[in-house]
Length: 220
Image (cartoon, rainbow, N blue to C red):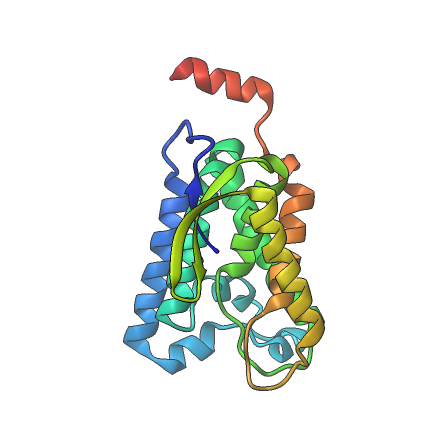
């Protein structure tokens, strides 16, 4: 299932932070294409380097890099499906902090899972998983317009958020439990799990209070 957007609600404000983060990810990917593998390797996170105290800045920079066109397109589709509503609920400043912290937690989770790995880790999916975790606990019953692909059959389905995100999370757990870590790279399932758990547990701390929401509504 590919999520396309929430049909149960519309944000009350333009999702400027979500849009800027998409633009930053696209700009970083263009830099990857321009500067090549050297650039990618330098700014990706390598767990063995982090545990040895080197290139700590890559905990942040790696979350803006992607391995391929399909990687960045897939991530940005998921991000745009869930990000605007979460941004609207938190407000721009808190949402940006939440996104960055979620990405950091996801990256650190991957390091803890394989502290001696020399495989570069990169991608926004850990931070996006945090956004999905926040969406799950905030709007669990919202219907998500989704592209359902079964073989050659493609149709639009309306799936409750708790079902779509829940199935996605179960898949991450299953993969994390069956894939043996190797030095060949792959999908950072532990980062996804860490990001979503962070989002689910801490989303409420970043949401605007009722009084803030009322003030914003009166201003509009």
